[in-house]
Length: 165
Image (cartoon, rainbow, N blue to C red; front, side, top):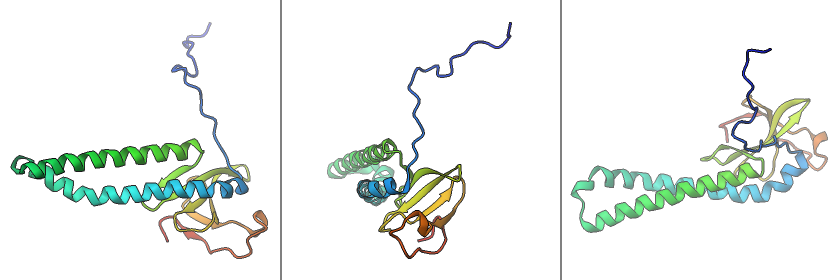
């Protein structure tokens, strides 16, 4: 008899989410939808950043505000909460598509895949016209997608690192 207790492997009873992987054609087909969602996230993140200084100022002086300034304080707080909710919802949409949001300010996403049996991802960043780079999971070096993976592409951009334009 074993001394280890019998435990369920999924005690919460929640269905396990299957790991999604995308091939290159699928990632490229998904790009218009992903681009729209990411653009919304980046735009909303910038609007949120624009409201932050005003929110901080109003919060610092909240005891000395006139009635109009108090109304504005409540309005800014509501706008910030709505923006945060919109970002969370959009990020959830990406997750539902099996796409990972890497950087919500720059608009960078990963399409998980497997390359040579290793976890990897095709990477796209807002402003790029197509999915042109990939990397192994845990690596920052972005490698150009080889021409033989995509017969339609004849020129590839050089290797770049995350955070570079």
